[in-house]
Image (cartoon, rainbow, N blue to C red; front, top):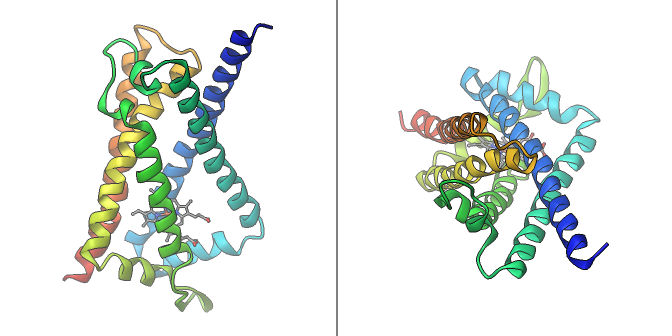
Amino acid sequence: MSANRVRLTSSIMNKVFMAITGAMLCGFLLTHMAGNVMLYIGPDIFNMYAHKLTSNPLIYIAEAVLAAIFIAHAFFAIRVTIQNMQARPVNYYVKNTTGNGATFASSTMPWTGILFVGLFLIIHLINLKFGPHYTTSANGEEVRDLYKLVMEFFSKPVSVALYCLAMVGLALHVSHGFWSMFQTFGIDHPRYTPVIKIVAKLYAILIVVGYCSFPIWAYLQGSR
Ligand code: HEM
């Protein structure tokens, strides 16, 4: 196999792995959002839901798999970006959009990925997952009071503003990622591509509206 062919195969494989891990993360975003909806039902339901999840011994495997998917996605994204920067002087994401050319979302993929997802995630985990450990009792059991932690965290306007900003960046990232994933799998058809683009936009709107609603709602609860 020629050197060029090897490079092409490796570049395609990187994109395929990036698309597969990206699809899994899109699924995670939906399930995590559905879990957070429990906040609206009440403290007991939210705390019991989080307790059921975290007290299951399989949670350690699930968390390790999730972390591996996030890391793999970032790893393949970095490789694709570097390979394309080496292959041509202009950024891959700028060049790789078909039809209408580059969009703001496509040309900012590495930045929205690093800043609005990577950096956000580190801050998010430090503040919530590894934040203060309050306890309460629900259904006669002592459980972690994550509801109190979330409400306390979003009582600060700066936390609400930073979260909402991060969610706009995340939505930009997934709106391009979602439809470019279909392209990587070779689904590029005059009839289906416009539909996929609409679904990608609807998905991004759901993410930004859904995820921004939690901090805003929590803040409004506290300021009443
Ligand atoms: C305002 C929106 C969000 C709220 C209220 C929220 C809430 C939470 C809470 C309470 C936890 C701790 C769960 C526990 O320790 O049992 C958590 C964990 C986590 N969140 Fe979020 N989250 C939000 C947005 C996001 C977003 C946008 C992402 C991804 C980009 C994300 C990714 C994660 C991950 C990976 C974990 C760790 C899961 C685990 O280890 O089981 N979250 N979130």
